[in-house]
Every structure is written in C-alpha cells, then in structure tokens.
Image 1 (cartoon, rainbow, N blue to C red):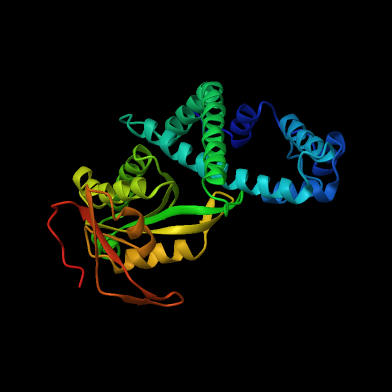
Image 2 (image 1 turned 45 degrees about the vertical axis):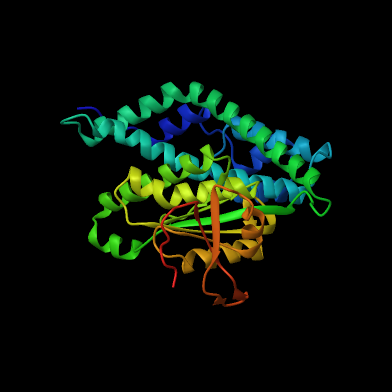
Length: 335
C-alpha cells in the first residue's frame, strides 16, 4: 500500500530543494536587514518561524537577495516594496489555493482510489506540470501588466483631472438575488457549484465586453469599464446572461460613473459606494445606473435610460436612479 506523501518532500519538490537555513542564516546570506526581511515575509502572508527552525531554502535566499537589491538600487523604497510584497502574497495565496483545489479533483475521479493514492497523484501532477505552469504564469502576468499600463496611459490622456491612481471609471456591481435563501436550500457542494458557475459566467461576460473584474464576493462581483457604453453592454448582458447559462436566481446590476481611487488592485470612493447602493435598489433582472452614466448614454440609439423613483442612500443623500434597458425592451417596474 502506498504511503502518504511527506509534506517536506512536496515542499522540496516545489521549491527546488530542501530547507537548509534558519531565518538568521537566510538573512545573512541574502545580505538583507533582519527587520526588512521579517516585514517582507509577513507581507507575503507567511507565518513567523522560530529563530532555530530550519525553514528556508536556497530559493528563499535568492528571492530575498533580489528584493534587497531592488531596494539598494533605488528601484523601490521600503514601503513600496512591502506594498508589492503584500499584493503578490495575497494574489498568489488565492491562486495557489485555487489551483490546489482544481488539481485535487482530478484524483477524486479515480474509482477506488485511497486517500494515499489521491495525495500521491496530486503531488506527482504538481511536480510534473510545474515548469509549464511557471511559463504560463509569467506570460499571463506580462500580458496583464501590459494591459494595466495601457489602461493607465489612456486614463491619463483622456482627462486633465486624471492622476496615476485617481481617474474616472464606470463601476458596477452584479449580485445574485435571494442568495441567502438559496444557501439554506442547497448543500455545500450544490452551493459551491452555483457560486463557481456565477463567477465563471460573469467573469466571461465582463472580459468579453472589455471590462475587468476587480473582485468576486461569492454572490456578487465588482467590475469596472473604461467607457460608458462598455459598462452598459456588460451590465445588460449580466442581467440576463448569467441566468441563461446557469440555473440561478435573477441577477441585479447597478452601475455608476465617476472618479475612483485605484489602489492595490481595488477601487475605492463615492462612485463605488453609489454603484453598490444602486444594485441594492434594483429589482431582479434589471439594471440601475446613476445620473452621470445616464447623461453619457442618453444619445445611444440602442439604449434607453428612464428615471425611476428617487431613493435615499445613507451617507450619499438623495440618489436619482435610472433604469437601463435596450431599446424596445419591455419595462420591468422599479417601484
């Protein structure tokens, strides 16, 4: 009977070698300061190891050496380095959990497989595909970096008021109606299928429409788009497209247009808050937009914007929502 794989063996296979150094030894070999090294390690999301623990590999030392060199050469200052480490740590943590979850379903499909068989298969797959996955990760990262840089340049050129992290965007939320009720009716696996189906379909719709998903929150996604027309098309497709592809309750969407603060991959500001409140006001299967976006869309022949009952939003005051629909589309009452 095969034995359960040793976590240390898995770690050595993925990290290119066994742990050989204590924290102090790794810091000394990398030529970094102990304080900075500890801050980077925590920012990456790893637990603090005891002083005498043999927990660091040659690749850990090299990574710390590269980070320190960037600091010494003035490429980034210490605070910027920590922010970058935190961003990469959070992103890679989620990516690693996601990939492990996907890989772990492959052995589960083998009939009669024991726990040891599943774990050994998972470890073997991970080790075998790692070089190819590294190539893909690097390529996708470069692609996304190029797209992000192009967006920032376009924003800066589009308006005199734009700044590298502060510029106008269309911001939208889309959420599943009655998700709480649904979560009580389904078991864990059924609920997971609904959430994954919603996120997958919604992400495809946003990406194909030229937008970007900022984050997913289980029963809700936050997306942004550069132009009013892009955001309108994405919102309308989300309001009907998700339920067309998967068996879920209706989706409601709210979109606002205005300046946002873009920081660490997220967006903040009154425009984001306004979009969230519009979503909560929308009826199932409909799209509500704010006055700024309605003004930008008023001359679009394929779209109609109609004012609905004004609503009070805590912290935002009185909002005038507009119902967005395609021309000649039947009207759903908004109340």
